[in-house]
Length: 169
Image 1 (cartoon, one colour):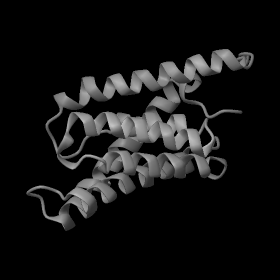
Image 2 (image 1 turned 45 degrees about the horizontal axis):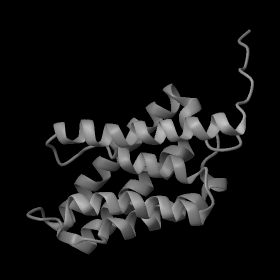
Image 3 (image 1 turned 45 degrees about the vertical axis):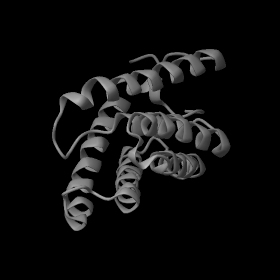
Image 4 (image 1 turned 60 degrees about the vertical axis):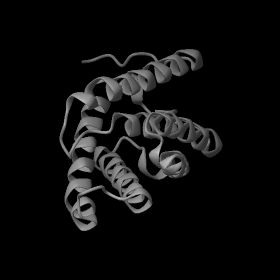
């Protein structure tokens, strides 16, 4: 019979949350530039969603805003778009955490899929899609990207459960 490890104290949970957040941000900047495809996993969104479920809506919104600000500073052509989108998604994730972030893997996957698709939808409507037609970006590439992000997130949740577990579980 497998023993369940004792629950981590508050300080350990905070440290694990920060380590998980920073690892996902590093993965975003380390892995995503290597993949030149229209479908990529969004590790930054995973970091924002996983951290937002541990925070109150105001702090989650601030976290999303700051992550969006960092990305807008890197690509300033449409400054403010990612700040707004990440802040809205982080607020929604924090507000809906009691409904979706349970131990049910299906609901968690659906939550991440919808979050990623919503980010792609809002960014496409705000800044455009470049040379790709809008319908193709929203109905083909965005769902495929959301599916890949969901699969990666569920894999990370399974393998590194202590880092990305919501508060209270």
